[in-house]
Image (tube, rainbow, N blue to C red; front, side, top):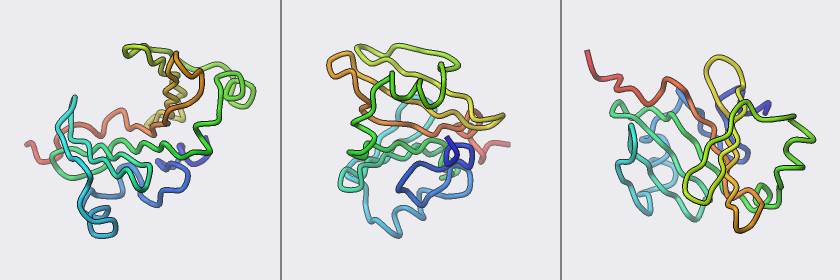
Length: 135
């Protein structure tokens, strides 16, 4: 939660709003895949257990981590530490537990019904998916 309040995910040095996808590419090379989805683009770096959402201005608005340490967590463990989520949504068989970290960021835990454990987390900017290049 502390890292998410700063726009960061554990084990990833890039920061939502402050980093560009170009920074990631310079350090980590070409993404395994890079596709448009929702309100932006998503670059997958499987070797690093990371996915970056970025807008047309190349600014990161979503940092996802599927680090093995996170994948051991259950909802009960999360709630014991952080309390009840601010909101919950469904995406197929996944349940997404959303924690507000302040005005700007959300920390999301994505838990598939099949495992009952975290698949990945997302540090998401509520405003960052907009096109900064638009007038």
